[in-house]
Length: 113
Image (tube, rainbow, N blue to C red; front, side, top):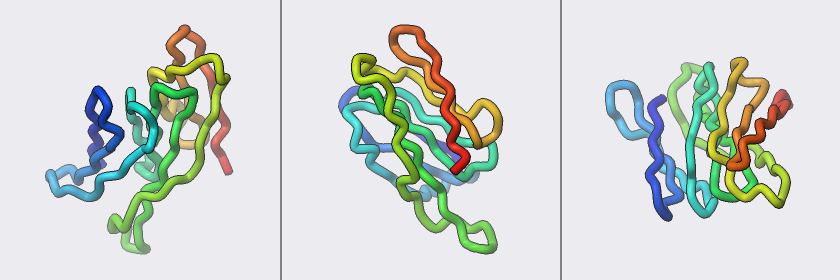
């Protein structure tokens, strides 16, 4: 899955196949999306935003691995006083999410649910 988000006030994420076929557009409903990251297995998408939250979405496929939809999976809420998550990624496959905050702090989240 290829992903893209734009700057400014746009809160959408767009998903395409490797061949350029558009799969989906989803609204993160966060003020601004700073970055997006896809897990190594392509099952999850992390969207870091200007708020203190990172939205995790699940990419749903059928039994033949054909894309079906994207649905919200969980919200990672950081400290309220840190209002800008610059980056979220899946450093070790898909069971953890690492976030980098505007103040330089790093957080590691266990997302194995």
